[in-house]
Image 1 (cartoon, rainbow, N blue to C red):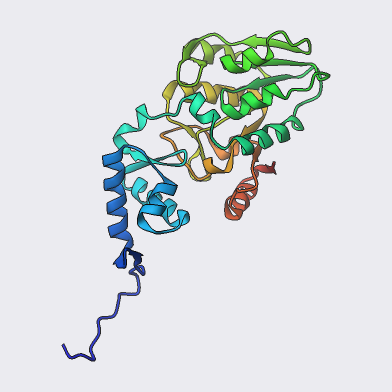
Image 2: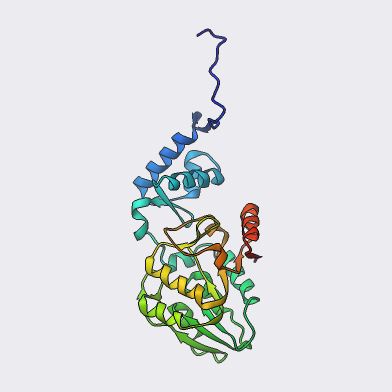
Length: 278
């Protein structure tokens, strides 16, 4: 080959990124990401972006590609090896310390979605739904049904709240009752609004969580409400855990923060979900 000859890159091949001055193609980067996740167990989007000198958007696209072929699973804020998904669910205390400002704003915005005084609401377990419970107005009488011990603890003794705590086995991870008794009790209930938390929400796969018993309980909470309001900060949008408990079409309102991507908001609007920005 003469000095004037060159090799053209096929039109379908992505332009490489640069790592320490060396070009890295998407396939090579994704392979290295999968290896890092396998070795470290859990890696955040920010850590991967820094390590590979790419944007967080690029990392999210790479993780989606790796998840589609079964090498990793996306979780809140990052990824884990596919084989470890069942054991890495964040505890409630850990989740309560993440994105606190957004969660406070979301809970405050959700207060405006309460049904009229005298109504029945179900409040799901979660760090944001617990914040909602703490903000329930003192002059707004409600019957509240919950399986979440932290929610019940915040509401017990309040004069405007008739509190019903669902039966079941309490999971240490979420501090919430789950199981056949919980699901059966919810099956007999008809509430005006269900306020629901989720580990992930995507247009393609709906609302998801990693635990089978949690999924069954959340599914029953959604079914119990005439209206379903989801409280989820923007980091959970586009994330998929292993078990779906509701389709996007099953929810009426999503309350989230202003960091939601415009494309995600448009897709949710198109799916008939009212998106409330806190």
